[in-house]
Length: 103
Image 1 (cartoon, rainbow, N blue to C red):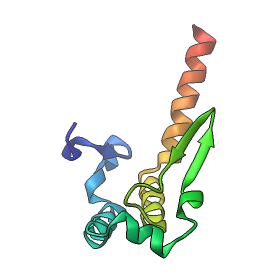
Image 2: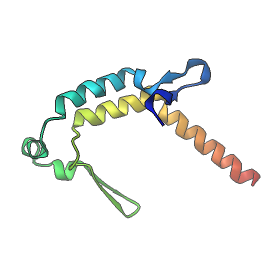
Image 3: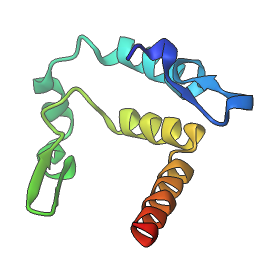
Image 4: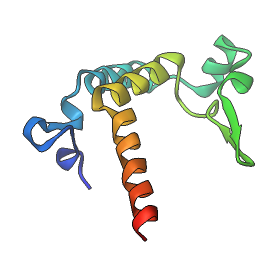
C-alpha cells in the first residue's frame, strides 16, 4: 500500500499520514541522521545497548542496532498521537470484544 493511500481520522476529516506535521519532522530528522554510522551512536551513548531494548512475551527486541535516536522515538510517538492511534486501538478491541460476545 502506498503512503498516498494511508489516511487517518474519520472519512470527513481524513488526512494522509504523510501530511501530519510529525511525519514532516521525521523526514527532516531522517535527513539529519541518515549518514551517521551506528558506531557513532554507540560512542555518543555507551548505554544505548541497554536503553533501546525491550522484552515481552518471551521476545527480545533490540532497537539499539537501528539508526534511531531518542528524537526518533519522540517523533514516532508524536505521529501516533496525531493519528489518534490510541483511539484506533481502543476501537479495534471494542469491535473484537463485540465479535466474541456475538460469536
